[in-house]
Image 1 (cartoon, rainbow, N blue to C red):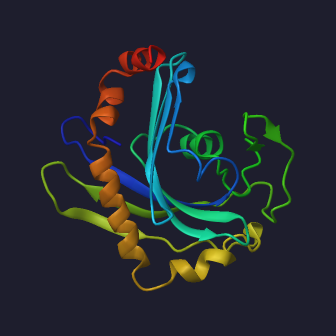
Image 2: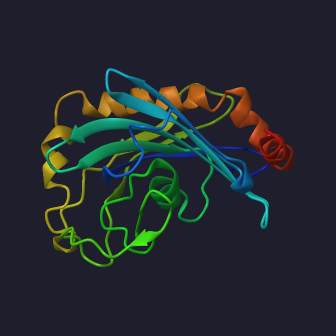
Image 3: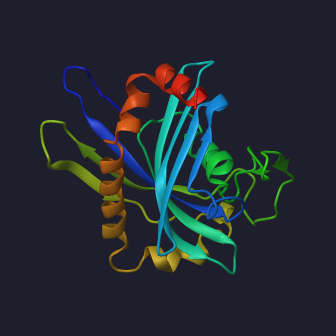
Length: 218
């Protein structure tokens, strides 16, 4: 976010989420939905999936941009740990992108339900998460100034252990405490920064209406 116009400062958050491995995550390499202005680009190497999501709501002229990368797969539990680095900070951006574009809704996110292959919401799933909680956690916050490559601060926060979360994070907690996990998170954040420099991402930032019209014409 920009703190002041005179002295612009960028604070970027890195979030990790535990999600249900449902529709589409492994299947889709590029999903294009022109009528809603949504574009999802995937790249999978050695079963490691990463990419970015662009979406635009013309009714309120609002764009949303998110980079994502798979961190861990739990095949037996049907869950996946994903890292998010959002370029924009719209309300419920990550939850909506997760459920309706990635096909991997956040565990416990019952506000938006669990959509099926055509977007219909499914009944509440008993996933041992308190009704007011969901498995989306801000793991890292970093602060930088455009005129300096040095970070003013860079801190991380361990996964929550509140009783209201039940045991939802226990299946990945040990993984997040392994040596090198924090460095991996920082490395993925670097990849996200490179991704945000791509032409398509810049285009939606500069001219979202023009970008949407180009999608509708394809």
